[in-house]
Image (tube, rainbow, N blue to C red; front, side, top):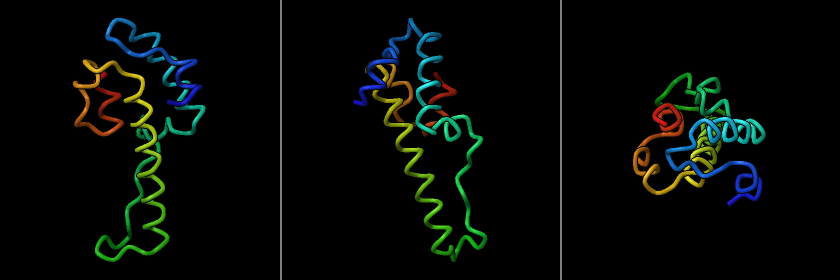
Amino acid sequence: MSSALQKYVPTLDGQNFQAWKRQFKAFLQSQDLWGVVNRTTLRPVAAVPANPTEAELTSMLQWDTLSERALGNLVLSLTPPVYQTVEQMNTPDAWDEL
């Protein structure tokens, strides 16, 4: 687990949502991941979906990597019972659910 995540973000246990939300958002902002979570940084799409260019594939992969990093950090900051409520969701939907 990231030492900054451990140091600054409490584990969400269901009772400390307001404190967790503020700290986790700040953590994501510090990691340039907040845009993925709040949907201001959208996943790129190919101009021709059946035939994406190499640059388009690279952009999509970069976004996917950011999304996975955000989700990984999210999961690390949840207790198991809280995680069970969002385990099948993508990062933005999990944030909205919490």
